[in-house]
Length: 295
Image 1 (tube, rainbow, N blue to C red):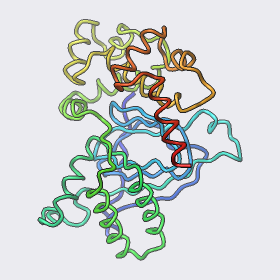
Image 2 (cartoon, one colour):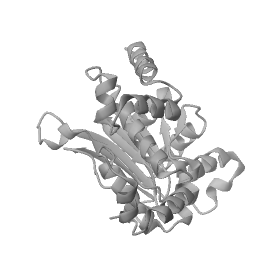
Image 3 (cartoon, one colour):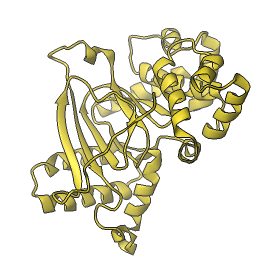
């Protein structure tokens, strides 16, 4: 199984980009990609986002610009799959091609920042802080505008993002360059296997079998495509999930270690520090203080 390619009808005579505002039991949870860029805004909902080789927690207000053909998925927490009437996800999505305003439009000198933004979006960009709030507020207003006003509003939103410093690149450059040049069918099988099983005790041999390769050849192949060893990649995915769990005050660091797929606390602390440059305790303290300051 590999990321599903979704074909959007963004080049119709009726509209230059598509948008949707949905209230659903849970987000669309199939790893997929499409030619269009996507501006994704979570109004309500919690879970884990996977964008390329990035994994991180999302919650109310999460806003991300996903580049063309970048595999991604937002997966809600398991409570959203229990068919609870009091728990729904609410989100907005704008889908548009890089040339939605015209083939050479963004090559105008005045629009260079937007052109740079759209190119950088191949890594996925999280828009946070005040900028994220402004973007979501403006996205909501777009649904009440006329067709022509919507195009202008999208341009304004992209301009706001392009001139903000409240941005975080998500997928690594190594993933993007290698993914685009690789045999995507094979590596996609491996990515899906990892994302669906990283909480379990999966082995190099199992991953190699998914790729239909012997372990030694698989190690060389995986390192060439991702710029990381299989173990390093797997550990980073697990650490990303652990970061999400650390926001839950009910769980101890020891519990989170095992909940995120690690087998011992010492290795968990080591890998967490290597990935985030913080200990789990430091990460938890920092984000608890950040949350308190907002309230």
